[in-house]
Image (cartoon, rainbow, N blue to C red; front, side, top):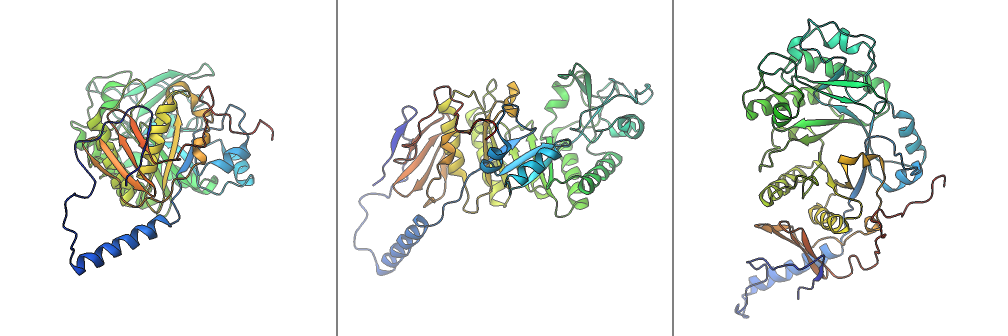
Length: 430
């Protein structure tokens, strides 16, 4: 008999049934009996199987909240850092971290002085950039990138697309949008990645801001006025897919991950990018950003794309945007991550708030110590209601309302901290 426990509010049963149909004749044929016995044996085997574990991820810079490196090394299974953080990466490994540490690189961006409309502008060779883009040293932009106009993306006036912002050190920084279809830009980026492989001790690359649409380029730049190079999202995606394939061909065997951004949340929308990638970050998992929630259809499309990636053997990092005290949001998304876990694992989770610079804080939770038993059936969804059976109960999730039923005892031993931040880490210095 199905047994569930209500949690986080009322759950309305979906207008369909996963239960066996009642009134079925009991005098089954011998073949049916054998099939039923075989199915029961499979369920017993699954119930006793070693459960896959959900991994936990930290990114992009060393924490600023005095969390010891030893705590990070012991509690996280995937870490993304940036060029310049090599000493911290080495410290993590000395403290026992055995997972991959990937170098974060902006996929199709270049930081430089400016803003410059085109290559005719005088370029300030003394400008000192950050190390997030491949233009990561003084004079790299001016000498190697600025002269090549075809490497850049432009608005309809023929001016380079850019965003400008003031960093914490008071410097105004300009980041230019680069053309993923440009052969010269691809070759330059690949050459820089090869240099990183020779000089730095990272385990692969994590491409930030690999867009699935032109939304950022049309609306979020400082000089929006259309996009000269691509007249449709389909053309843009084809160029990005070609870019990723070129990097994959140039770096065989190297781990390549990407943060898939500006996602229109359409089923099958990742297909062109997946062949070149080993892993994907979903930075607005399940519910969207705090100020821009995903619609129920978008949530289901995202879920389908995650399942498709996992079925292809890709690894997926699920990032949930939320406030530290929003325990309901954390529990719902964590339960959904558990429901998505494939038998081979390869799924990672982080709960944080990217809009408040909190990525440099470790929001650890006692909930993360819990590992559900191995599921005895697949995750099945109809409309926005999803269910997955486990020994002793069924996990039920309503993605439209962000509510769930939990099998008994899943969270029985967990008491959240009052402020929601969970001080389950040792004091600094231990």
